[in-house]
Image 1: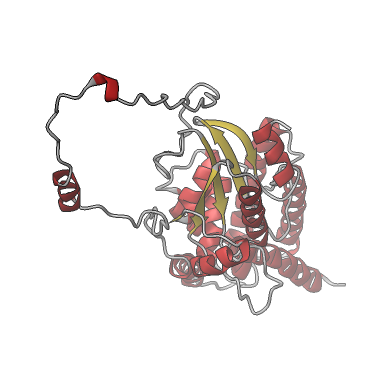
Image 2 (image 1 turned 30 degrees about the vertical axis):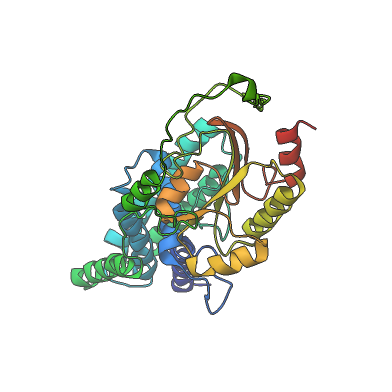
Length: 365
């Protein structure tokens, strides 16, 4: 194989690496689901921001810009590697530079966490990779790029506008494909529809009349046995859970707070199990749901499957992931007692929701 064929093979391989990585970050990782019925760039990018960028210290205002610019640059480098304009002088060195930044970042993550768990986010959810695996992948890519740089011919007549146009088009395309939204909280609350006006209250008050106290023979007074107070379990000391902005009464007594996605099958199964527990135990804690604003039109079907409509709110994607917590995934089910987090189920792995485990914690079986 001559140098030209080797050069094009390397260019195609590395270009696909960048293009697939960028597509994976904007497609929920479901690239194989042609024709991309569940394609949701805003959801995927927002998830990338919360799980990857916010954990690095990016502010919520800066992360949306950085994520779109970064993914746009990944697309641009993928396309520019297939272009001959300034390939050796600009494109290859820029690609090596970006990969070097990734390697340094992933090395830092590895130093902090050990690098043997978690998804680095390089390929979104399409190909989960630990930081160590990603470092190895990037080092190999840098090696291939150095090889490509050595065997490539010097740049001939090139047009700088070709590079800038492709780069700007890719970045602007990301902002158009996934427009940024202002965080919105609570677009639906099924149990907040009861409104009592002041006039109604005043009418009820006016209807209560104070009767004149008359002298009554004490011998005719019937003494009633005082009603015995129901002794309530005090539970743990009162705490602040941090969820009161979602539900004002969440820190009072026993509560179940759920973080669900309307189209998530595991979330639907969890809701169905919670309904079964409420039917089994009359004193089961109240269940309140926070839905992610993704496929919100599926909420009626969600409750139809669950067999009951629970109190619920819908919040934007970024606040949803932030409230759920770093490193956690859906379905999230939190058992709280007086604001104390007693049990937190999340995801579909070892910490996944289990109705029997929850029942055991609540009733200490």
